[in-house]
Amino acid sequence: NAGVTQTPKFRILKIGQSMTLQCTQDMNHNYMYWYRQDPGMGLKLIYYSVGAGITDKGEVPNGYNVSRSTTEDFPLRLELAAPSQTSVYFCASSYLGQRDSPLHFGNGTRLTVT
Amino acid sequence: KNEVEQSPQNLTAQEGEFITINCSYSVGISALHWLQQHPGGGIVSLFMLSSGKKKHGRLIATINIQEKHSSLHITASHPRDSAVYICAVRTTGGSQGNLIFGKGTKLSVKP
Image (tube, rainbow over all chains, first blue to last red; front, side, top):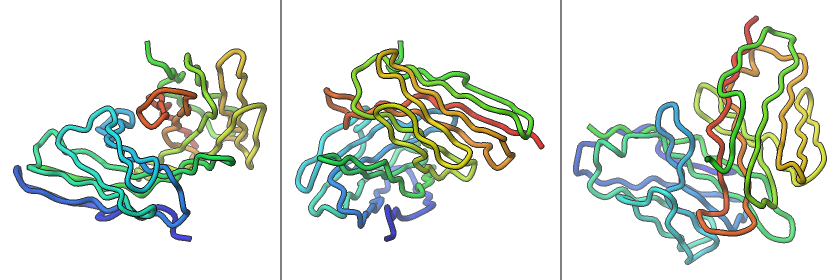
């Protein structure tokens, strides 16, 4: 199993550009999450999904959008990139149900907006 | 007051020392996670526990539900254990994806 696959690993954007961070998992997890981590800080939840077709805002959703058309994929869209969105982004997944699973994280995307 | 508090924030140890990292929480939980983030940035799950104690190699995690407290112990520490250790709790209610993270404990093990 590949686990959680997140692409790209690095990206530099100019202010105002848009991009999509891809995240896919092959563990049939129902919960998927997007976090950002600023230098020296903890993880902040951007958006999460409890299953295909269902998404909800986290702590810091402004400037981002998500979709969950399948169980496997949970892309994060940045519209009109701003320097404040310079951060490391992590996708994560887990299964919650009769037998909960541990959290699985992607390797992260280091995004710089200049 | 943060709902998940970790201590210490920073910890420096000599190789071979026994290390304890603490996590206290103030909400109702269904599970507690210990995560490890290496300097390269990747985050891996070490333990998920809802009661008692778990052991994996030199790592031991305990939780006391009544006291709302968990500890992560590392025996015979090694420089490769240097990382940030993060406690996260899955709450029994509310939104935000039901996960609340501590700010992490930065561990440095000197040879």
